[in-house]
Length: 318
Ligand SMILES: [Zn+2]
Image 1: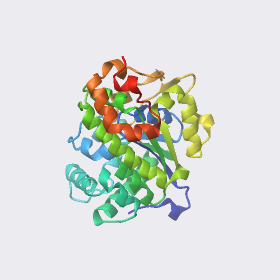
Image 2: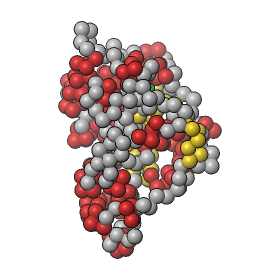
Image 3: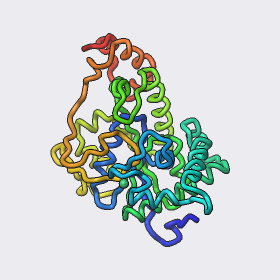
Image 4: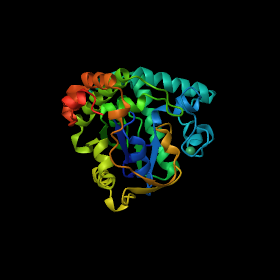
């Protein structure tokens, strides 16, 4: 059963949802915020059940243990598990409901508030899961970097939760270059496919932030790495938290162990971490033909986001 904080008079739980397409810097932003007392970065929570049931790309928690052995996730995975079923059966049921109700194409239907039986079941589970995470991790702000637009739109339907949204966009040429090579446990993807996803996920993310502008923020990855401390200040103001808690000093943050589900393999890094300024390596690293493909597929949105695709760029300046 859902134990809504409204029943107990407690403050709603804040969930900061980082949206947009993968390789947009969400993992490091989440891990920076994870350093603030009372904040907890869950990583890509959407993939908890898939990865715990060993059907996903990585079954390790950010703490280095298997998700099923982690002190946080071993307590969360049984939430909503019907009596007499195994964890794998429960995970399979959750994955089926995810596929049936919170895929990217469901985002607009979710924003209109239309409900299906599957959706109600998934919303009930996620309400209990977020509350259980808050309790287990002793946190009042959860950062979710799933980036699945359907899951983001669903947050509005969860009792006792106040969602906030950050739509993070990165230059699709840099994203395509990042996807061009497999990275540890992450497979590779061609520039056309990467940019197709980039467009779909960003359109869906825009639909969500447009709907809830008072709790939303647009952020270019390039602006984050130009001024990481200032960006974290902005995020803290968005969620009505004190910027005095900002853990970034002079581009550096001291990272400790986290409990992220999936995400960029850099999530395992701990210790003093420097956020390096602008990375333009795609200009020489991404073939000119790929740059032209990305430019052709992404131009209406890249113009909106302020990315330059001048004559020099379209010829693959190197
Ligand atoms: Zn862990």
